[in-house]
Amino acid sequence: MASLGHVAVGLAAGRLHARERPVKWMGAFALLSLAPDLDVIGFSFGIPYEAALGHRGASHSLLVGLLGLACALAPGPQRLRAGLLGAGVLLSHGVLDALTTGGLGVAFFWPFDDTRFFFPLRPIPVAPIGRGMASGRGLYVLAAEALLFSPALLYALWPRRAFKGTSRGSPRAEPASASARPSSPSPRGSERDPRG
Image 1 (spheres, one colour):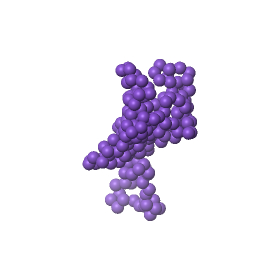
Image 2 (cartoon, helix red, strand yellow):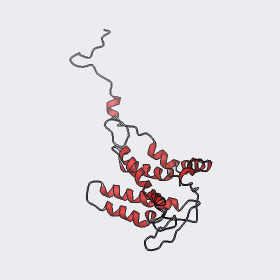
Image 3 (cartoon, one colour):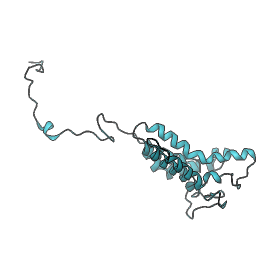
Image 4 (cartoon, one colour):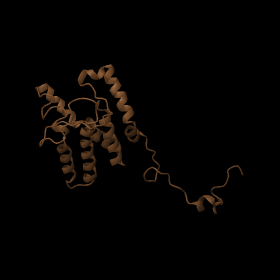
């Protein structure tokens, strides 16, 4: 994947998590969504793609998501919700990669089994690694991911309307009796019409 889909999932999770200051959480979950792909650093150290520590290997396993879930069980305010969403974001990375049209598959069951897996349905085009993203193929993959993940991107980036004194962005309705009453002049006369 070109990472746009992963980031879309992270942004949507951040928006879902935070009613207050969602940008902070959206950024954190977007970065977390990319964490499994840090395994590409292994190429610089001679770790082959197909190795357990290679791309789409250990870092894409269910174990990584379960470690995120373990963090969710730590005590603290909002930690459970954030941890569950974080674990979901981490787990979604491998799942999305297993829906791509290329590569070697995902080692979901590492360290117990190094077998790489794909899902039978693979609608996401695989992205070229490195400089290949600047090619026509890379641009095609970005466009395809933008289309496939547009619902998540729209949810995450759609502007919120803030209304003073309301919750969850809904305007506060005035009571029907208050709006139906005709206005009466002030008993002190301080609000008289200046025109006479």
